[in-house]
Length: 313
Image 1 (tube, rainbow, N blue to C red):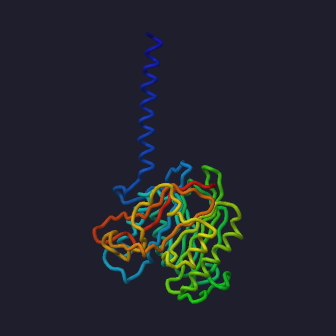
Image 2 (image 1 turned 90 degrees about the vertical axis):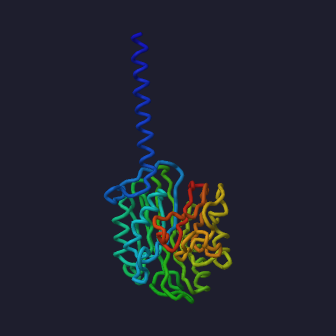
Image 3 (image 1 turned 45 degrees about the horizontal axis):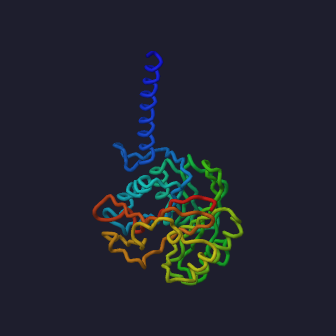
């Protein structure tokens, strides 16, 4: 009797601790909304060898957007979407100013990031690109950027582009799997057809020179649907479209530019302009995310694209 009773108690204690661990784990991994004070978590625990990688054009802050579309009224929705879907690492396009970047920094304390602007050769001014990453999960080993033009190290427009455009890259180290990989974040020109095609060629050339055989993710707003074969054939010759190679069927709409549509059903498949291309990476799932927190609009005029993936395949 004296031997059985302590063992019974030990099992009860062990079971209680197990329940507490499960509850704690669920709480950590399923953060989905602001707390009562409107704050977001300062840390996110991520230990799976499957990564959640995303691209998100958040739309720049502009006085042209009124009501719920104004950045001041939707910035917390952008952050909530990111936390709700537990992004591990993601590229952001259209950070319109340092003020908008500082809002992201304040709202996303669990993430570190690197960013560069497109209006000078040091990347200090102009609309910005950012690579954000869970600072408990990754270390950034190196980063850089180049202009999408005939002179990649000098600020300026390339080919027939209407605006300066850049590519931001980083070497990341996954502290869980001890694996290094590259992330390239792009925002191609919205008008220049030749510029988009040449930008794709330049990005692939830089990728080959920098990354070697390491896993690579190229993501961003390419302003080109699949009919622009000069863009996408360049990428598919060197990489894979994550939507096509996903082991599970894709979820969400095909189109990614919603143009402030009221419902996702109104987004045409031809509006697929945001992509995640991969090399030496296995894609488990592919999703176009349509989370919304108001009845009038989505958090941005683009849907984020997210994949779950494993490095080194």
